[in-house]
Image (tube, rainbow, N blue to C red; front, top):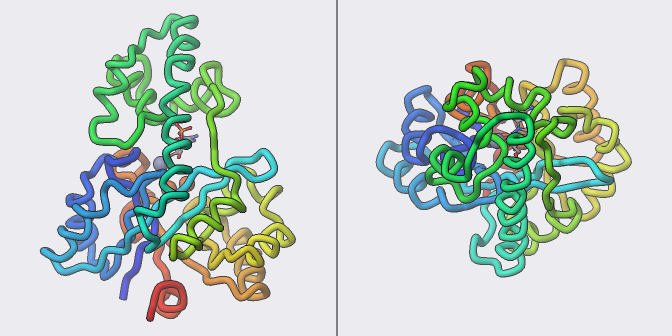
Length: 275
Ligand code: AMP
Ligand code: ZN
Ligand code: FE
Ligand code: FE
């Protein structure tokens, strides 16, 4: 069994449609794939239908933008009720925050002679639930200012970048509770990527486990061997499930983030989502 529990379609900032993503997952030999678009469940129905037609199990998921002690933390949610009113309202707040700061970011780019309009961004975000920084990056590339998304983040759109404007993110503990109260499972995505090891300490993860957290994503390209060993120790001590996933974004991320490049062990998958 090959299981990949973290992927993005064009309903957030990936480049495959949900159905294409599922067909690609089947083609590379996966047995289970979770669709986890940022703050959106709008790809679920197409992904599940495609999974039925090609014969691969689709797990319905999400990656929620949260904040913990001032740091950005991504929370994966699985198999929750997508109509849960409290969760839907919080996701709406995140999506509105993402869109709401776009004009300010474009104004900052304009101050530096980079001309990107709302229409340019909309042309890139297409079917996405909201336009975010990756779509601004794509517009900068499309207009010939830069070569790729990474260059756009580096110095422009990243948190220290000249065009960066902060946006709302859900408080992490509240997001865990919302996913759990909606009947789902909660897993911290890449807990020790981009400096977040300083905030997601063993003690913090213990607090989150007590609040209902089910697992942590250990095998992710952003984690080196040492980080994985440390996270495995913490998961074992706290009884948390250990997952592994690609964080595939189609051509929106490098080829090293290909479908199935990291996978979840079947016994961990069954602990999380079985029965
Ligand atoms: P936003 O929600 O609009 O602030 O954009 C955040 C998204 O941009 C993240 O979820 C990532 O998919 C992407 N992202 C963040 N930092 C980087 C980076 N340094 N390089 C490429 N993509 C990034
Ligand atoms: Zn993304
Ligand atoms: Fe993430
Ligand atoms: Fe992701």
